[in-house]
Length: 240
Ligand SMILES: [Fe+2]
Image 1 (cartoon, helix red, strand yellow):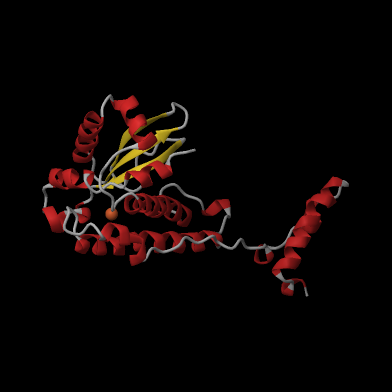
Image 2 (cartoon, rainbow, N blue to C red; image 1 turned 90 degrees about the vertical axis):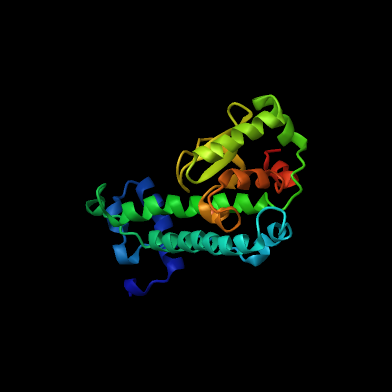
């Protein structure tokens, strides 16, 4: 029976639609009912574990404590889990246009919150990938920073005041169009990204990133952060 066709069969049938149209047949004869449409399997992200913060944990006592990083890991995992939850829901999305609505709709809720979930995953990927170092700058990242800001000290001053002026993040992006780096502010996981940039360094300035160690003294956290950046990891993120 048609309803019992396997997913593979349905894909093959789908492939014949184009051939049918090519010889002048109408598509209607080949249209599958919604319940028989092949579903795309969602691609899922890997949920981080304590192994992913091992490098950052090695710097315990040098500015950001292991306790802070371990608590932070649970939030990072939350972004990964919610990314996967939304991807699974999107794979089952009812795309009937009558169900779309900009005030409230299932699609709006999934898509808006997807940007927050996936953005939060990527930000934290870069944050933990580029922590756990000695803070000794070098390589192409240093050259790009000097080209854009004059000196490393001037870049640090801009990074710090951007961190004090943002509600969530500071991003160092490499702009592929202008071939230079820029310190972007981010108020949340999904605000103010710039097109055609590669994120090479990300500093979390939400209180959960430093409150255990510095309470509300964010400037002290930023000063400590500079000494913990793994600049080899930053350079590895630059386009070759
Ligand atoms: Fe965070």
